[in-house]
Structures are given as C-alpha cells and as structure tokens.
Length: 189
Image (tube, helix red, strand yellow):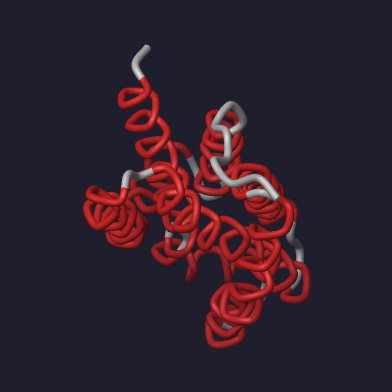
C-alpha cells in the first residue's frame, strides 16, 4: 500500500469517527417525547438534560485538545470513542432524569475528546498542499453526522424499538474506535 493511499484511508476513518460522534448528538431527538414518558419525566426537564451533551462538549473541547497534544491524537480519539460508546449504552439503562443527564454529559465528553484530536490528526497526516481539503472533508463529515442524526435515530427507533438508537450509537462508536487503533500519529510526543 502506498503512503498516499494509507494517508487517505486514515483520513476517511477519521472523518467517519467524527460523523459517528456527531450522529450521537441528535439521534435521540425524535424519540425524546416517548423517552420522557417512559422515564416519567416532563419533556422540558428531559430537553434540558438532553442539552447537557453540549454543555459537556463546550467545557471539555480545550482540555481534550491539550490531551491530544500530550498523549497522541489517535490514542485520544480511541479513548473518546470508548467514552462516547459506553455513555450511549448507559442511556439504555437510564431510569431517571439524573441518570439520563449523566449519560448525556458523558456522551458530550466523549465527543469533546474525539473532535479536536480528529482535526489535529487530519492536519498532521494531510500534506501541506492538501490540508485545506482534508479539513474540509472532516468538517463535512461532522456536518453530515449532525444533519443525519435525527433521521437515523427516528428510523432506528421506529423500525427496531425505542432503545435501539442507543445500541446503534454504542455499536458504531466501538467499531469506529477500533478502526482508528491502527492509525499512527505522525508527531507522537
């Protein structure tokens, strides 16, 4: 395998990782009313707890970028994918508002750990003359994940059941993290 093909494969896998964590953001939006009823929580409280994902994401983005610089980008992405995946699975077992909010916060932390590491590793792997297109690709995958998440979540819940979006997020997160494991950082510190 040529070095160029290996780099392209790595960039594709990094984009997929970013797509996966961004799917998790809104995958549960269409099922929130049903989920609130199942947990016996009013939709306003559940909506607030659902937003904890973004609060955790905002708080942890900068520390996660520092983590990627210190411990390696690929390793950081894998750790973030595991946190994201396990927190998505936690949502299956949430039985009250606090558990739901804690799982969503952990999911946001996982996404925060992945995101800056993906962009940093994209910048490291892409040759200088292709860095802009590499960033454009990963940004596109991030946006596609956000755009597709409610549809994917709604279809999954409708065809397979209310908790299957959580199982789906867990499975694709673990799978995506496993695909990142063989990617080598160019600038390991």
